[in-house]
Image (cartoon, rainbow, N blue to C red):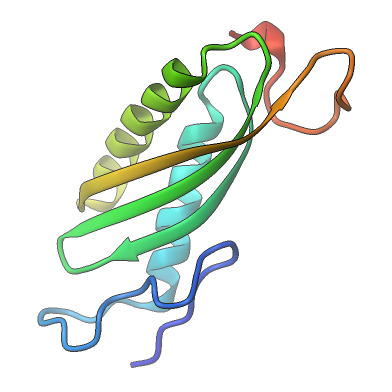
Length: 126
């Protein structure tokens, strides 16, 4: 079976060759990425979420997410909250164990300076 990365993921993030157990459909990676992005978007202070990698095997998943946040929110608090929310949501909706969620903050938006239509959350949400 051939796997392909979902939009925003790196090649080679699908099941490893020779993995025993049921094969995963290519859509599984995209589904996990979609669930993770939706969950992370709910965290106050998060403006944009992009999945960088989804590593999926028979029982667990590892995720790398890139965020853009609003100035005035605690970046460590946002990162930890995103990890917790994504872990809970992905585990609940897929039945997989979440091995790791790596969060990288790529940028900080400053209210009144950066475009207000950039993201999904506003500074008032936090």
